[in-house]
Length: 112
Image 1: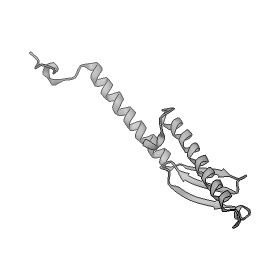
Image 2: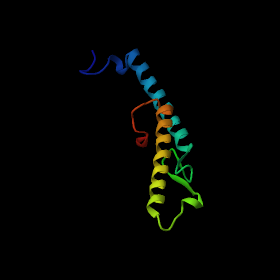
Image 3: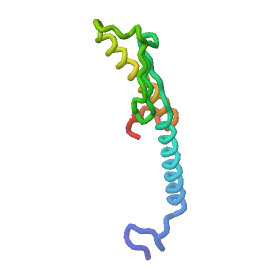
């Protein structure tokens, strides 16, 4: 006779074993997707491409490129706004790719 709460002989029923295998396979696929996403680069731009920011899927900023025409010592605020907009654009692209790769629309990819 099985102990209270256990399965006879300590074995899992067939359906439970299949569910565990599926869960492990999904976990491997998510890990592979996360690695793929982290190694992918995304470039966002602002100011008519006067500012470009490249990040990876891990959200590391890899580069910032500024067109000389966007640099105006008398209007630093415009440059700051353009840099922020380019970063947000790159992050949006990374998020969209993460949703596609991870197949989890609506979940923030920054958590993976």
